[in-house]
Image 1: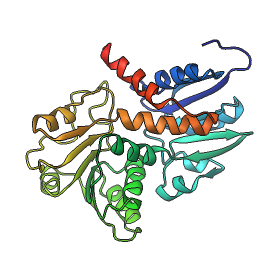
Image 2: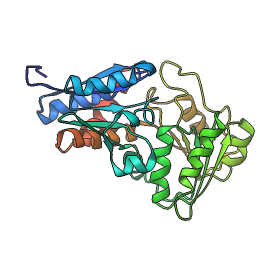
Image 3: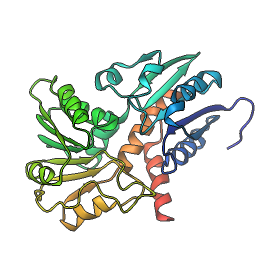
Length: 286
C-alpha cells in the first residue's frame, strides 16, 4: 500500500478500540481491490465524540465506522441517517459526501448474512444479553424477518424496556425487557432458539469475563451467538461448546457488516471471502 497526496482516509471510532480487527481487514481488502484508500483506528473519549465527528468533515475523511459505545450517541451530530438506521435507532457507519454526514447501519444485514452462512434459519424466540446499539440493530433485523418473541436482559432495566418497546412496534413480535439476573437468564434460556451476547464482556483484553456464569438450562437445540470476535473463542463460546451447543462468534458478522460498509464508502464490490480469510489467518498466527 502506497500512501500519497491522493490517498483517501477512512477509519473507525470507539472506546476501547484496541480489540478491533477492522483496520487489518479493510486495509487488506482495499489493497486487494487496488483502491487508494487507508483505514485507521481512532480511540475517542466520550466527551470528545462531537469533536471526532466534526473532524470527519474538517479532515475530509470519506467515512468512519462507529463501534461501542457510540452507535446511538453519534446520531445527533449527523445531517441525516438512512431509513434502516432511523428504524433501529443506531448507526455503525458515517459517510461523508462533500461535508454532509449520513449515518447508516450495516450490523443487522451483516448479522443476518452470518446466520445464513452458519445454516441457521429457524428462529422464533431470541434472548439478548445486553440492550445497546448492536442489540437494537439485530433485534430490528430479527423482527422484520419473522421472529415473534424476544427477551432483553440488561444491567440497566430502562434500556432493556426501551428496546422491548421499540421491537414491540413490529407486527406479531412480543418483546419484554428485564433487569439482568442469573436466575432470570436461566429461566428464559430454556425456551430460546437463539441466545446473543451483545455486551463487550469477554472482549480482549478482559478475556476472562463472561456475561453469565452458567448455560446449564439451555436447550440442546439452542444456538449461542457471541458478537465478540477477539478472542476468537471467548469463555462464553467455550461454555456453550462444553454443552455441545451450536455456536457462532462475531467473526462472520464483522466480515459481512464490514463488507457492506466498504461498498457504501467506496462503491466497490468487496471480496468477502478474502476478508474472512484475512481475519482467520490473523487468529491462526496468535
